[in-house]
Image (cartoon, rainbow, N blue to C red; front, side):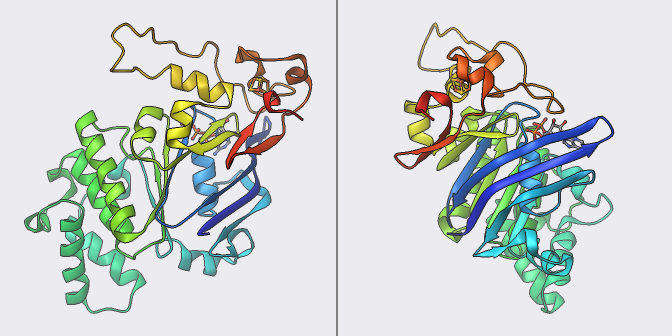
Amino acid sequence: MLLEIEDLHVYYFTKRGVVRAVEGVSFELDRAEILGIVGESGSGKSTLGLAIMNLVPSPGKIVRGSIRLDGKDLTKMSEKELRDIRGKEIAMVFQDPMTSLDPLMRIGDQIVETILAHEDVSKEEAKRRALELLEEVGISRDRFNDYPHQLSGGMRQRVMIAMAISLNPKLIIADEPTTALDVIVQDQIMELFSKLRDEFGVAVILISHDLALELEVSDKIGVMYAGWLMELSKSEELAKKPLNPYARELLKAIPNVELEEQELVSIPGSPPDLHDPPKGCRFHPRCPDAMPICFKEEPPTKSIDGRLVKCWLYGG
Ligand code: ATP
Ligand code: SF4
């Protein structure tokens, strides 16, 4: 197994109190697998992604749990060991490439610098690889000397992906990588992630609020709500028969192009303030299936036919 996360707890210690942003999250990810992490705003998706890189910003802290990459626990590593892992073994792609790219530097040179910073190769070799990488992500070699502002948003995101794969990482964490892009470009970037999985065996954690997009490309999907992993299932199983009521309600909110008169239902209410989440199940104020025990006690996480579900409907 490439990545094993066990009982992960990440809290932010703010002046207003403790924000329990990720609580009791466990899952595994294999090589060449795409895991979608989905949930509404504030559900802890980005915090989970940052925690895997051990990059949770202050006042955040990993307070409990383990994150093992190829058996090595990242939560127990020194800053030096972590620096070696970041970029080389795990790379991250964010929503806005403009914040990560240097506007004054040609895109090709930025890829070359990334390679030279981590690997003992000549400048010529790094340039040869940068040109190959550009081609790999669907940008023609003659754009090597372009500055970021000369590229479209989709192309800039491709450059970020080229930089992410330049050191042959085992895992890419992509946080809302296509949110700012139009639908066609979104699909093209998703195809690029599939290609990286299929041709290079890279594993991808794809963080998004867009479940429809996740279903297109992910092998499995983790549904987060208020810091909890509510369900983890293979994408086709989730689409066919979600187990957790929150996952079901999220699916109901996806426009189904095959149904002419589908009534789109968004989930009434909003996610809780994680300084003071509801007692019992954090979803109970919005859950159509809530039972008396849901108001009082946290539901356990059960494993059912290889799927994970956190909900009292599946017994105590
Ligand atoms: P979004 O889609 O809006 O980015 P998310 O699902 O990625 O949301 P997170 O950004 O991980 O969720 O936030 C989870 C919780 O942690 C939220 O309650 C948020 O307010 C809180 N949080 C995130 N970053 C910080 C921070 N730096 N300091 C304090 N609280 C934070
Ligand atoms: Fe709904 Fe109860 Fe399940 Fe929570 S535990 S999702 S409130 S049925």
